[in-house]
Length: 270
Image 1 (tube, rainbow, N blue to C red):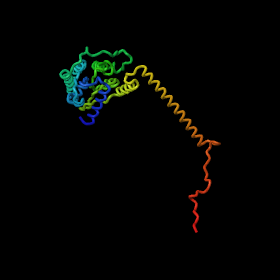
Image 2: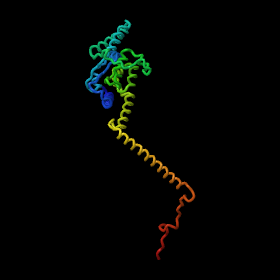
Image 3: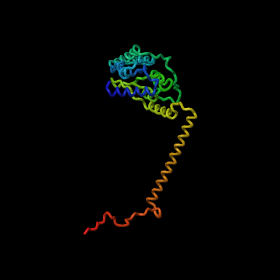
Image 4: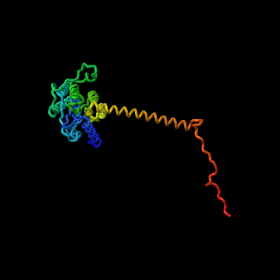
């Protein structure tokens, strides 16, 4: 791994360690079918790349049963032409990797927390395949990825849906390069809101009386600042009248009362 990518990965992992305590080793990586097929096409040694990206921390790779079923169906449906035989072979190899090297999450272990009839659910989620829906449900279970999954996918629609959820780290492949995405805008926004709440309530440890006292001090400070601004404005107006105004307020110009004795020529001695 190049130095720049390694540095970015360290920063991303540090962000999640500080702001999402549930995302800690041993890590859990949930693979999508598109990611498995892309790794076969590009001949990517997944375990080696994951180990380097995660800074040699312990991790486990998971795959949903619906993903394996989807890969099996795609392998069977691939046309029997010369080019498409390779695609069918890729699907079959990806499924075999899921069976041999991954922990399988059975369908009855996938939480059904999302109501597809809810109008607030994005249309893209309703159009997802069963495998994509299961991955999304696993990440959404408990809110803010409480199950602590890193999701590896090449599906843009699924990735966009997961980016809108705080604290869902995403892996993707750029050809043969494994990339850990930087924290999403949703993750950074949620972190900022949480930090502001902590500052306002002293980490949730303030009593009602202490919070009332803090509010009183804030009001007094605002009132004092307002009075200072009014006083400064009055001083500025008075200074402006003295400099520009007329009549008795106008300053008299100083004039020389006589010649400067230092500039006068001294008397000559006889």
